[in-house]
Length: 173
Image (tube, rainbow, N blue to C red):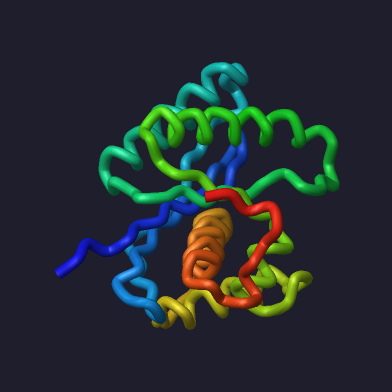
């Protein structure tokens, strides 16, 4: 029996970074492994918050041994105030994955929505419902950042498996 391919999905942020882990045991199934969030206090310095995020990502990598990481890219941002902190959080996550020798793929929010639901402008609730259905969950995954991270992992899985709707031009593996 061959080892399942494991994907760690990341929805980066300074206050809350979501993570989700799925396995690909076969060509048309996904197995939910786990999900959650890394939270940091706004009372901490930026450097202290980034250190927590990096340490927690390293711990997740050690605990789950993913074969690949999929992370949300910064394509368009509504709030310029959060752009730099999110970019910094992405940076420490990317560095942790690279240091661990894990392949990294990046997807825009629209690419994730298109891959998971077939519609690039799908609402958050629709994505949550589809993620739950794909994983045979009775309830949607909470909190939202964790569900978003699982959706990012599913997007990468679908891209790897060659789903037509999941062929983002900017993805790198």
